[in-house]
Image 1 (tube, rainbow, N blue to C red):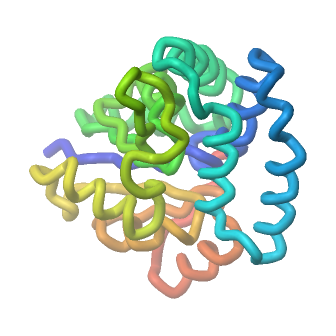
Image 2 (spheres, rainbow, N blue to C red):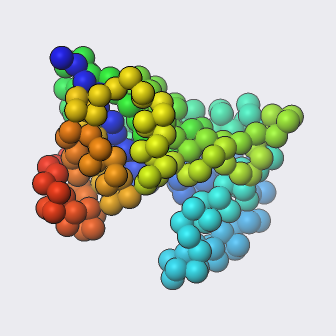
Length: 217
């Protein structure tokens, strides 16, 4: 019987996260965005020392770099970047794992905190059936509003979104892959949770919860 394979994106399928590289990619094409660079760096610095939450910094960068761009412009940027990312930034075993699940007839689901603008073209490039991601909010005239449509898609929110979008799947027939401790709720919800090149907190949790650990490099 075929099942469902759910994959995180950043540092699971890929060797690094895509949000900041996408912001820099877009800013290079729209130099006026670099005016916001000092405030972005300050927010990132404050986040590192615990003054700002990660979600707040992500929203600030999104607003400063992308706020006001037309749908046409940002979707073109996202498509170009997403396809480049899927071609150049994958872990060594990513395509082999996807191919194995595809051959078994499994439904491939990308569930990620990455923005939909990047996650959807990235997922299409690799043959995913579904993409669940952080959603862009739009103004009435079709521009990036500078906020998210809903919450940042990670942790418990990612699990909620997966359950909402995939109501017909049986978690007993599902496998989930992630590198990060924030995805522990998802990894424990499915029958087969896999920690891929995990950072230390997830590696420790994998030992406590008997999760499989894989090295895709």
